[in-house]
Image 1: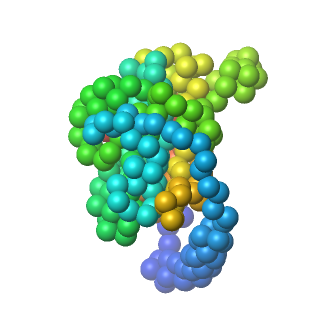
Image 2 (image 1 turned 45 degrees about the horizontal axis):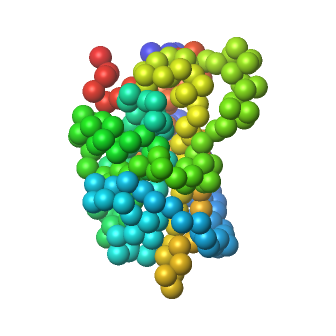
Length: 242
C-alpha cells in the first residue's frame, strides 16, 4: 500500500469535519443539478422503432410495459460481438438489482443492443442477470440516440495508433477495435404522456458512473480507484476475475 499520512484521532476528526463541509456542498449542488435535469424540454419521438424482445416485436411505447417512464441503457454488444463489453457488464451487475425498485417508482428499465436477441439472451444467462434486454438491430434506434459511431467519426482515432486498452477490450468481445468502437454506451430516458413518447434525457461517458455503484464505493475506499496511470482497463466480467 502506498505511503500515506499517519495522524492522531484528533487530526483525523478535524480533517474529516472540513471534508464533510465540502461533501455537503457537493450534495446540495447535485440536488440543484437534478432539478435542472428534470426541467429539460421533452422532445416527442416521432419516428417509429421496432425492437425484438422475448415477448415478440414491440414498439418504443410498448417497452414502457404499462408505466409512464422508461430508462434504456444502450449496452455495447454489437452484431459482430461474441460477448458484451466488460465495462457495460460491470454496470449491469449494479443495475440488475435496481430494476424492482425502479419499477416501484413507475419506471421501466431495460437494456438495448444491436446484437441479435439470441446472443443477448445467452450472454444474460451466463451473467445471471434478469433485467429486460431487447435488440434494436433491425432499426436505427441506437444510431439515432447517439449510441453508434460511424466509420468517419472513428477514423481519426483509429488512424492515430494510440488506442490504449481498446485492442484488448475489442478482443474480449470477439471483434477488432473498429468493430468494438462502433458501439457507444448511453443511458436514455423517456416519458409517455397522452400516448406520445418523449425523449427527456441522455448521458454517456462519466455521466454513466451514477449507475456503476462500485465506483462510488471505491471512491470511499482507502486508496480510491487507483486508475490514474494504469495502461490497461482493470474491469472484468464478474466471472473472469482471478
